[in-house]
Length: 235
Image 1 (cartoon, rainbow, N blue to C red):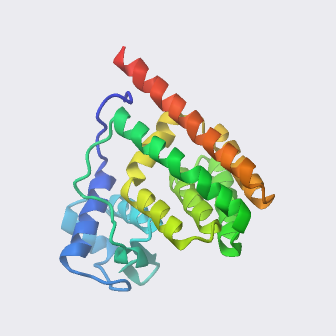
Image 2: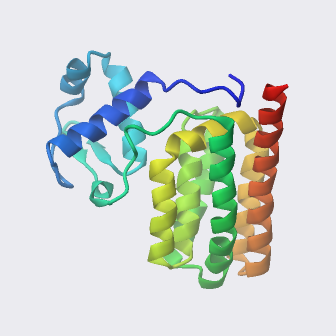
């Protein structure tokens, strides 16, 4: 698929949206129990593995919790006023670039603050997600895109500012599928990882200016790739 084309939502995307709508319709609170995976699969007329994939995506965003041998429960993030939009527009090149431009305006100052504050819990989570991303990269694990979302959430957490963390969380929750498409189109997972590694090194070193610079350069590099592919698809 060219970046200029409208992308198709996968079945797992549609199922995830359906589960979010179900939570809303039933007005379930965090900790509330949903139907079993098998029952949900029957409800949506899909195979159990497909249903499980959709639930894992929601689990990565904190909307559900899968407990082995127990069932599916509503996650803490369901309390948020901003949740994935079940009627969000399909992806286009222009939309992906707009999202990246917004992130370039927001995230470098957050990275600089993270390097200044270095909130212990956020820094620990930042290192953990980088290690997990390296494992995914080494083993070709398709969960890499989810881990990369967690990386940016952890970077905001390291800033120690709960409002900024909520802003980044909202971007992740609302635009998760756009972020996945950006990673796919960028295509260079090792380069993406190396740039994330540079951001972590700057934060751990306490260098606000360097953290700002490398984060801005990272997002600019991604924008350049996506914009070039978008222009190529128009020719």
